[in-house]
Length: 70
Image 1: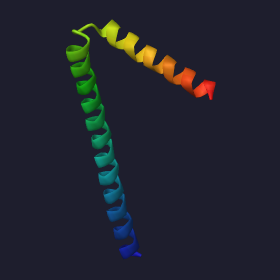
Image 2 (image 1 turned 90 degrees about the vertical axis):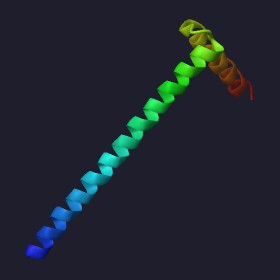
Image 3 (image 1 turned 45 degrees about the vertical axis):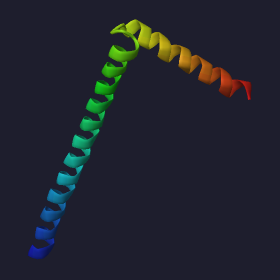
């Protein structure tokens, strides 16, 4: 019985550790995405965020048109 309790506690610690690692990876991925967006706005749109959004909107509209025309 004691061994089962120890195993349960160790299992909980391992699962909490793994979920923490996944959360850290998700946070790091978000940070990289934000940084790359900021770099794209700076380099390709001369720090004009509206130009960036307009470009993405145009790209999305053309993608939808291509998909619906098939």
